[in-house]
Amino acid sequence: MENKMFCYQCQETAGCKGCTIVGVCGKKPEVAAMQDLLIYVTKGLSAVTTALRAAGKNVDRNVNHLVTVNLFTTITNANFDREAIIDRIKDTLKVKADLLAQLGDTADLPEAALWNGAEAEFDAKAKTVGVLATENEDVRSLRELITYGLKGLSAYSKHANVLAQDDEEVDAFIQRALAATLDDTKSVDDLVALTLETGKYGVQGMALLDKANTTAYGNPEITTVDIGVRKNPGILISGHDLKDLEMLLDQTQGTGVDVYTHSEMLPAHYYPFFKKYKNFAGNYGNAWWKQKEEFESFNGPILMTTNCIVPPKDSYKNRLWTTGAAGYPGCNHVAADENGHKDFSALIEQAKTCPAPTEIETGSIVGGFAHEQVFALADKVVDAVKSGAIKKFVVMAGCDGRMKSREYYTEFAKALPKDTVILTAGCAKYKYNKLNLGDIGGIPRVLDAGQCNDSYSLALIALKLKEVFGLADVNELPLIFNIAWYEQKAVIVLLALLYLGVKNIHLGPTLPAFLSPNVASVLVKNFGIAGITNVEDDMKLFFGA
Image (cartoon, rainbow, N blue to C red):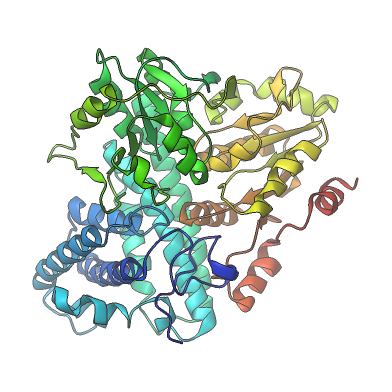
């Protein structure tokens, strides 16, 4: 039977092989088709911009931003709105046509750069340009690995762009790499090299976002975040975009409406800038996959600034708002004006008519252990290592998800020896950040650096520890990497770590479906990439116990 779609970019893809009827995420085949086409025309546009740069011509910043938002739009759980994606395809084709006119000589361009079909042709074209259009399994695997890494990098770049930070070198690479995935002359070795180069620019992109966030909002600091509720009506903000949060907080001042974070927005509380807002209440709920019940009980409007959207229940669909690259059909969308400003007044007015959030838990979470905060504690950490109070660090960054097998990470955290400290970032932390794991000489046993992009902090911390202990190689540190992944932002984090020379990373709960056996074996052979098994056996592997 012919596939209605094919997508295997996330960890939860059907049977760890690929979604062929409907996405496990809820993505319909007709949406998947338009996402495939959007990627195709974006690769075509990128071939044109790469040729323009080679000819010594400048590419406008707006074109760079178009590319990154296009890629962001196709990330898992970001945008389910077929019409919105069609609009982006049309915009991309128009921009591409304008740039082709500037280029002149188009003889060496791939077909994707020259295709300019009408909307009536979109569905037919989409059927010919999806993932399976690349027949060679290993080439397909590497092209997709690169593309997914670029999607993650684009997400981080877009967040930096919103805060007035751009890196033309990163944008040029994204486009050059996208164009390279269209080039049938590229060998498997060429694509392996490009994969590692993607990791290099992943580091650069995360550094750009770190600079953007810390310049705008200060360096994260140790912060206790309330997880209970207040008595005022509230707005719940989820996703990753701190600028959206800033605008929402500004606009809710004096309205009687509180603002709560959800999932990956939790680390916003760690930035000094946001502490001035008295109506910045705390964090509500857990990781993205629990949102159906948590959005229900929150009672007020929810603003999704990025992924991860779970198709909403009708009971709260009218309270779910999207912005940026996120979208869901039937939900209200808040667009930015020409100056980047967003008007959230409709959300605020809706919030005033809603009951206060229903309390689902009480207590607090401690976080804010980004690189500068940990560097400030460096002497204390070093002394603890030298005294033997801390024997090992375990990096448990990455994503959470709905699969029952992910309970492994909760049990793994519980089973860790008491002289072990967890370094985390991303929503994977919700598997263990509410456990009472205690501290070691005042150092909490869970050090939360922030969002998934703040894995950059974890890399800097590892490199700092290497320097402090006078080691030649980061792999000589008492450091274990046991990382959970779900979507494409985790892919760029993985590639960035590989570029930095980190070896023996364990990845779970499953290895990516998009890794062909041969590509997986290259990663195993060169970098020691491995999966997870069970808590008992992995404890023996990591600790010999």
